[in-house]
Image (cartoon, rainbow, N blue to C red; front, side):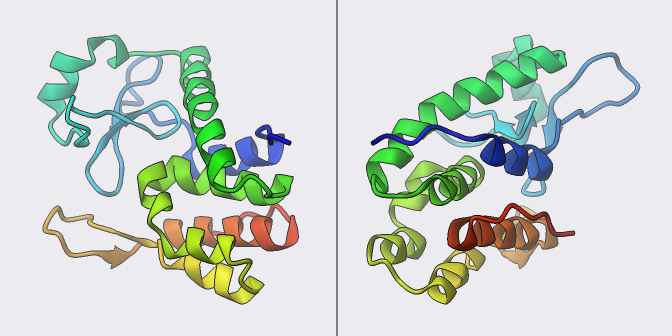
Length: 180
């Protein structure tokens, strides 16, 4: 049986991503940099060069994605829906026996960190091995760091720690709770 993304997943994702708006003085929504310096739109949708590298220079956003310099909330919701529809079958294939809460937690994780990172992660290995809850939680919490200075040095980001705790609780107990 294939899982479908539930409202819990959307609520979790939207809580931690929120709607990105780079310039509150302008009407509608503009691109915004995430804590690692990547340009995003809408609900944390990262913008990439054709080689898959995240865009870090705003002039490249203007050149490559002029359609995203201003979007409305309906467009932001559509982008999120499109992203989740692409991600859902990939996650379902990796964890086909997951229950709804486990699936939703992994969708949120993959939306934030990327499906390729999930594929090679200790988290996925522990999920497949059906490890105890505490080991799954530890594996989620391994992903709470970011390079905020662009110097390659990772530091713990409280927002990611809160998000990983929420994902782990949803995965292990089926409880949706927000931290922060």
